Image (cartoon, rainbow, N blue to C red):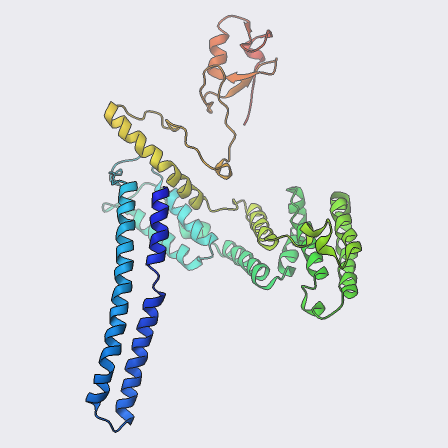
Length: 406
């Protein structure tokens, strides 16, 4: 990949079109000036055009040189791409897939558009997908379709519109009031989830007032800003004292370090970079959670995970074709696919005896001694009435083992 990155850097340098754009602009200015001179001057148009010939030629020569450099860099980069990613045959879309669920895929795409605020696109897509699946080869399809009304309801659209309004106010206008109003209206549900969103909004509002973020405090002194922040803390932080007492004490205690707050131990609290974006992401996560949705689009996650896994699966396919073997397991992948930690949503357990990953049909079982093995391994060990644990001297019976839920 290093050679590919070098070619990309070279392309970005060669394909700098700013000089070419300047040449185009200068050519346009020369032509406009010439037209103006011809229309207003008493000189012959031939004289004006003759004077224009050399500057126009120089501009065109400059544009040609710049385009040649850009095309050369693009050609080198294309060769590097072809060398790094060799052309491979991909599975044909006509091949039947045992995992085909067109209705669920359509729903995921529609929900993605809806989550991105593209309400009209989501509605049009789902209506057209429902119409296309109603008839298959001139016959009505027996596969259940998902109509736009099921997910593109007016209530759901209003909820996402509210979310984007709050995020826009927070990011562009530094206005926390819409988010605070929403958090207070859903305080009980957020508290049941163990969410700290409401306190984080109040904490940032306190910091914002303290640092004269509010327009009414822009031209006042330090003492007035402290008083405004302290009044806000007295009015809003009361319900959070039991859970966030230390955080509140640190916020209020930082006032003692003014006006040298940047050199104080509390600098990271008051001058943290990216705090607004982090709070926006927290709000998005909590908002979607109350709707029963994940914070990120499932379509985006599945597509990204598939792009990560595709090279490994393609390599596996080539090896299987050479060895004339087939992929026989439908419920799990035949190879390990390394995914980022953020893409791991479920716990897994590998039996220490059989070295196989447990499934719903072969769940993990915990013996009275506390050690856990897969059900199939337990059944093989318990052919007699009692058996010895493979990892400790303890003995047990198969009926004493309990199923572990991951």
